[in-house]
Image (tube, rainbow, N blue to C red):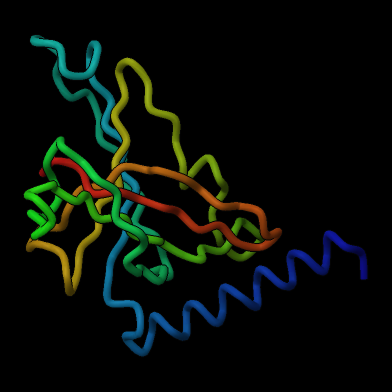
Length: 157
């Protein structure tokens, strides 16, 4: 078996395990990658939404609290530490990279934002507000050949 075939077999096995975990409710958070395209530059008066593309990750990946980063821009929770707002970071994954039976490409998971495109991650479920909460991508760890883990940070809601 070639290295490429072995990698694809490993991805399929990892994906099957993740699907089993999601099927029994071990992954209660729904994660969506949302790309909003505008008629002009994002945030400029007169620009309107042209399209919205939402990719709901399936199977639902594991979502766990990562390290918190200081933020003065809101979207976090007021901390007892001198009133500094902490924007919560979460680790999303591992997520299976693409193979013949499923998975995602890095481009699908980390689409590029642009002058007329906004990208955010919507986390919905147990610990998130009804209707979900928005997050931005901080980092993507794709150092393993069969999976990727995203680090996302809460944004102003």
